[in-house]
Image 1 (cartoon, rainbow, N blue to C red):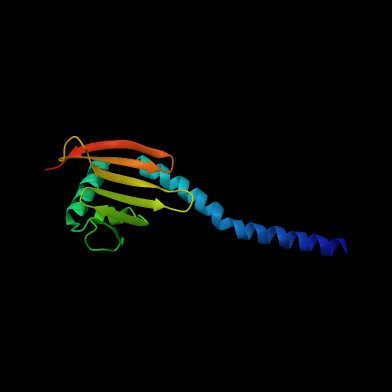
Image 2 (cartoon, rainbow, N blue to C red):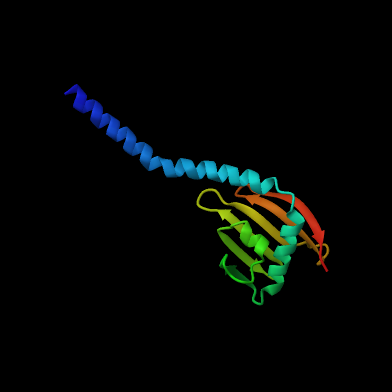
Length: 134
């Protein structure tokens, strides 16, 4: 009887571990991706690619498929989950659910030739760099 109970408990524990493993994996993947996005050295290039995309937008604001041919190769290589764009901003989101984060690139209010790239989370955003684009 004790042996059967031990087997049942073992199967239950294995089942629970199997059920939670995707969430644990997603948490580790998310943390790694966050570090990677915040430690890049090519923010000016990312901002320039976003400006190129923003200039290709003809309507006010839209959600764009990541496979859309208007998306520059650099942005596609980042593998965002979602991209939304208008003529003066682009948002690339890399994670959703209860843990949104990504890049926002937008024209500054001070100078329409100046654009800023931010890393954002649900808790706020951090300026990464600004560029001037004619």
